[in-house]
Length: 317
Image (cartoon, rainbow, N blue to C red; front, side, top):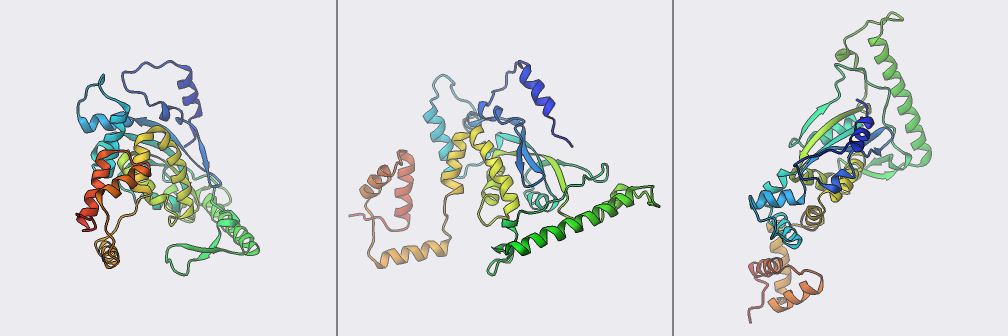
């Protein structure tokens, strides 16, 4: 597949009339190609909905003339904070992305999306293979079975890149010979000829996902422990999403992406440590501190007080 740049240029030159709500933040990103790695990219191909669409789904019906932006923000933050996820499923994004096959195999683990991938049974695979930059060629982590440790020395990194390049060339030469009728080539079916191609070969797809499941994808793949290559795609997609649904994105950052949740044993340990030190908090102190740190929402502050009370850390005197 090729990037359909002409289609977006034609759309920009035509005044389209629609009864659908237009998302100005998403519109700015339509067809804007973000290069990733050495041959990859991602861009927004289509979308449906906005922050207001999430609100509409949550309320089912509301008075357009009486709604305020603050009410939209308050509701969306409440939904995200309390994990009421279905309204966020009403907004969808469709991306066109090109990535190495090993990245695609990680990506497709997120099974809550629709995709259509380039077919190596139908089409010939391009001579494009991923060669990592020297600064991301690293040894195996000593404390993480699926992670990287320190970068190798420059001399080793260059040797790795040369050997990978040579290996890719041999694999592609064999692939081309298997397809060919020249030089005694066997003219194999494409579905068989692709066998020698490495997982560093590039594939591409259209990937459509709702906002709730996209947030889940981004939370996992933007994490510093995620593999560098897929993290590059997640970070690029995040730039698009935060412009398209800024209220939802802010709530996602506050309550999901940058939040920390405690397990039951962890919570019990924390309560025990604070109790042994005789530490308790008054509701007035909690409210004053919360407001001083910028937390203005009355309901959210009440929820905080309630959480501390449930942990038996509220001074009831």
